[in-house]
Amino acid sequence: MSIVWVVLGLILLVVGGEFLVRAALALSLKFKITKLVIGMTVVSFATSAPELLVSLQAALDGSSDFALGNVIGSNIANIGLVLGITVLISPLTVDKNFYKLNWPMMMLLSVVLYFMLQSGNVLDRWEGAALLLSLIIFLVVLIRRSKKEPDIAVGAIDETLQVTSGFKLTVWLLIGALALYFGSEWLVFGAKEMAVSLGVSERVISVTMVAIGTSVPELAASVIAALKKEKAISLGNLIGSNIFNIASVLGLTAMIQPIAVNSPKILSSDMIWMIAVAFVLLPMIFLPKKFELGRFKGFILLASYLVFIFLAFYIEK
Image (cartoon, rainbow, N blue to C red; front, side):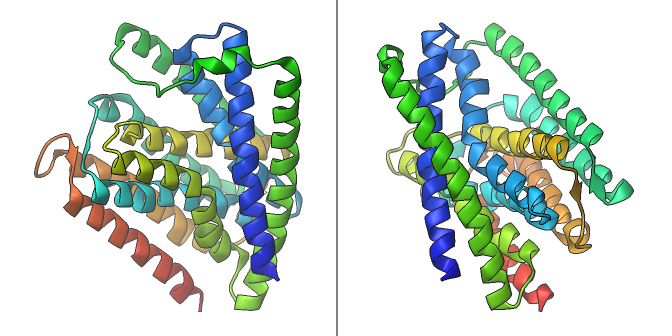
């Protein structure tokens, strides 16, 4: 029965996230917010809502390892699984802004998060506030840079949403909020039950199965874009998702409910994997061919992710 709750929870999170993104876009367009700001802030934050609700629900339930595992596992999955499969389907050209701003910010947040957790085995409210503040500063810098460099794509935005009625907006927001709330409740409940039935810890389930589940929307969008030979999904989108996961999801969650590190494997294994997978992207985009991620590199990323999944269960037992 636990798998049913997990699947139902994931479905509701996907549905809720979609309605929330549409409502956020429509509201932004109604208030005449520029596409640039919408693409970099409103959409990014709205798409992080499922991870935020899952981590917050887990933290409030006293499952801190679950809250951390969800974010850490999602960040590893975004690069190893999503990027790996996408590049296997269609090679990707990397924008120079990757190593000028996006990658350094992702690495900085990853390393800072590691030391924050290691220092007292807890992510407290002040540390959560610091993470959130760093995200705000990053977004201000990013938007200012992008205004000077109009080539930077922010993704297609459906302008027809601007004429959305107030009633429809209210319905979208209501559906999104309810779906995200019950989706997070059912996913956390089902995943806990699954951990017990499989004889593994909540950390293992959250960092693998739940993380893959919350990465399904990004994976689906990336695969469809790759099959259509579109550049709608770039490396920057996935890096941005990882930055938001750490700074907004963990930042906001810790401000509401401090997140304790109960399992030493989070620091000795999961965080190391997250930092390593993020770091390896830099040499990958320069060697052997500059600014391109080809199929062989995609195979390496995917193979690394499968090794991570295997070790997560193997080391546990």
